[in-house]
Image (cartoon, rainbow, N blue to C red; front, side, top):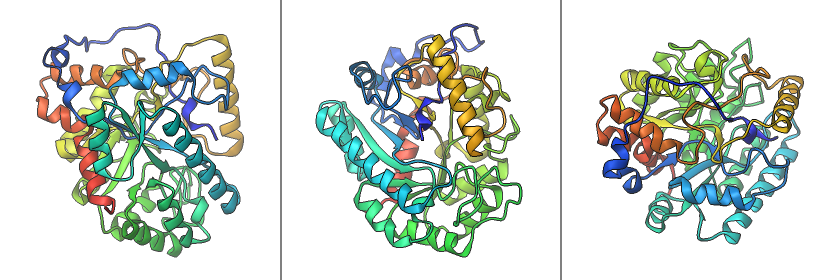
Length: 371
């Protein structure tokens, strides 16, 4: 349902965080494993369903990303079998992309595949789901999803499904019995359990049921900006105690509905480090790898998509026509390198920065995926 349109360009403005090229000087970015905990190859200014154009492929090639977790299915209320079929089609599409551009893309099924992508200087694709509706009525579909290459799963999106409540459900009823069983099966089969869009009680129920590390791959810090999509300090600590990570995204919710700046992203990263520790923080942009141009056509498409999301009831607060989802200084395929420089300039050690860039996520994947 087109989640990958939601990251955009900030063409003007300045922040106090001006990088001095510290990371570029020693070039550890080139040598680090760099993982986007949720991102999307593709041209945000392209036609809908137009596929991956040459510019988008080149942007991935130049990004320096070792791996990217991307969503291959739809979100929102729909018949489970329809959702399952959409996932199968999505996996087939991205498998075709990998086969068409083997020098740029590869499939990730294990952490060895991430290491191999680093060795070949390509980008591995990690398939994930942001909604459990495809298996809410039949958990026996989970092994088939694993065989199709899915490695990261959220039980709920913003709304309720048969597994539990998403973060926009006012009742916040938590996991159902089927949802608890689903968490147990996900851990047994070797999926990374992602609670980014889950409700508060669903999150606590899942943490109690999980037998492996649990993560928020793309979120923000509630202490800095109150929002249903953001995580409280207690949730960040609980995920860290499970061995998982909190991944900071690039969304207007970081700035309470305004377009975020690079400073906003860094401040949320630093708060998550203070609360959960440097071994439990990462990045998940929730946006396109390619930069976005704010053309008239793009603005209209963005407004249309906002209306569609609100009509479907899957929108969150602060999804406005003016709140383009991008950050200043970060409208580049190498935005992770810019963030690394900003963190180094703020006094963070190179070892900490390398953990945030991807080492923490690689560890979580190693601890949650079956070989």
